[in-house]
Structure formats: C-alpha cells, structure tokens
Image (tube, rainbow, N blue to C red; front, side, top):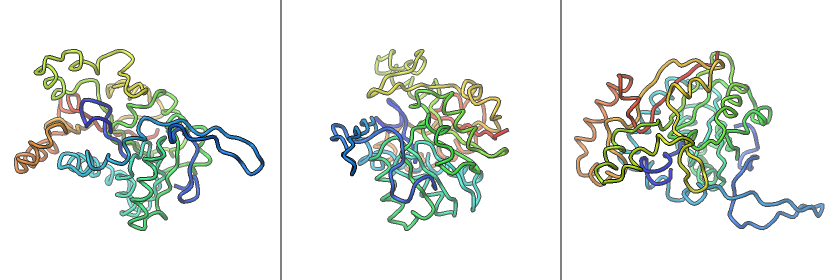
Length: 306
C-alpha cells in the first residue's frame, strides 16, 4: 500500500456478485469524473475518488514483486492455502491488485474479491484475465462496511473469508465490517485477517534512531492516523477479537514482519539474499511464539465462525 510496508498504511492484498468485468457497487472512482447520463436522461453523480486509486499502477512494483514483499506474501499464503481447500468459495476484503485472489484461483478456489478502488480492481481483473482465471474470480467494487447490505448480491453464504496486509486498518467502521462478515459466512467457516498492530518494534526503533519520536509512537494515537483523507487505525489482536466476538472465536495468532526488515530496507535485502532467507526461516519457525505477533509490522489473526 501506500508508503511502503512501514511508515504508512500497509500493503493490501487483493465472485459471483456481478457479471465478469462488471463494476460492483461501492465507493471510489476517478477524481473529477463527469456525471453519468443515463439513457432515460437521468444524471447520476460519478463516484468519488478513493485514496488508493493513485497507487494501483505501481503497487506491485514497490511491494508485491520485491524480495521482502514476496516472502511476506508466501508466508500469508501458507496459512490461506491451509484454510481454503480446492473447491472452496471465499470472500476477500480489500483485494488490491489481486495477488491473493489470483493465487487462490490457480488452486481451484472460487473468490469474490472486493475493493473500494476501481483502479485497483482494474489491475486485478487484468492480472486474472492474463491467466484465464476470470471464471474463478469475480471482482466487485465494494467497501468492507457495505458487505452486510450486499450479502445477497455477493452470493452469500461463503466457505470462508480473508483480508490481507492491512486492508482492515483502513476501514472506518470495523464493527460494521464485522457484522458483514458474520452475515456472509457459514458456521465453522475460517476467517483470516492480516492487520497492522499497535506496535512494530522495527518501525519504532527506526524512527527513534532518526530523532522522530512522534512517528515512532504514532500507532498508539487514539483515533488512529490520518493518511490521504483516510483514518488508519491499529487495533491489537485482543481488541479486534472483541470486535468480532461472539460471532467469531480466535484459533491462531501469527507474526508477519517481525524478524524481516522493513520494506525501506529493500536495497539492503537485495544485497544480502542469504541473510534474508535465514531471517525468513526463523520467522516462520517462531511466528506464533510470544512476543513476535505483538511486535511485528502485521499480525495474522485466524478465527472461525461460531
């Protein structure tokens, strides 16, 4: 996402609610787009721009295709693959450029991938189309807060749901999103959420070393941090679990980005691939050990629908 994996909102992850290639409901769109004129002469205001619209074109280059981004994505995929077997039908919130949705579709999982940013969805559709996977993935323009209202059009119930790399941090109304998830999942369905927590050791130390204490502790701010008009929050695993309770119960908590360096260290990572591999292996071995999930850039919270 935004300004790298640390130092801004997190990278984001990536059917059948609409026909293939069709826009879903929701918010987002080109800034300054003219009103739409219907065949009956009616005028409809164009949807407002979304803060992530401008990031869609370069997002994969700055995160998904980097050595660090690829390792984090693979770590998340190991858990996602274990949760969603071939033949499952799952919902994704905040699909971004479609990396996760396409990965699951390759494995025979049907995905309804939602995002409030149309440019992100356009990139995702192109990616899925290039691999002839549009028959398994439906991309729908939708904010997480709108899931409950659109449950029927999305084709609920689902066998599971997930949201990767901090998309939920950018959701203004988490209780509404939680109700939506509860309304579309079958009992026993898994829910996997990759979220930026309230404390990241590497980020804090980096900003303190630069003499920037306000940035070092910004995740602790009440009400979150404002970024491009979005309010970005950093819920703890316990706080997020309470928001999702009693509809969901926690089954596992793991770390994403506790021992690996921040994405700002990409040049260093390219110079030291062997050390990066070692750090990655150690993080995977220790990902559930205290305190790694609570000091990592992201944590992966796994739950089940009760």
